Length: 116
Image (cartoon, rainbow, N blue to C red; front, side, top):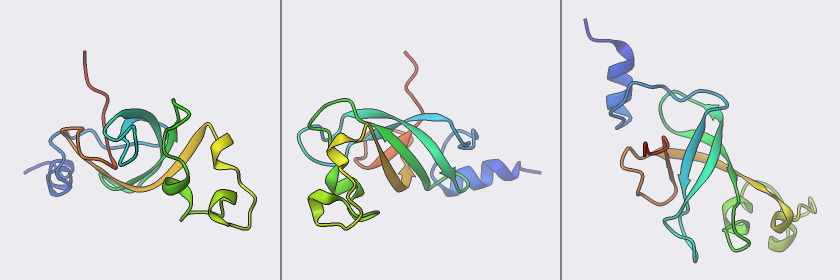
């Protein structure tokens, strides 16, 4: 009998059977801007099976995207939100419902760190 995890992983487009877990470090592919396509470290904050997951992305550069990634999730002062959150001062950013990409190239997706 086939392992149920393999079936669930295949349905999510994941070749590995390693299921995402809370607190696991992964890579997030920046979806737009001058850093589009670059990878940033992220931590899984809410796994829902294999994909999608919620992440907390660690910013590395001053021009890493911030406002457009989080403005729809809570009120940012640079988008006219009412909560007074200055996203430019944030070292991490919440990423909601990020999909898995085994190849690690699709913008706005996450993947396990490449082995070197």
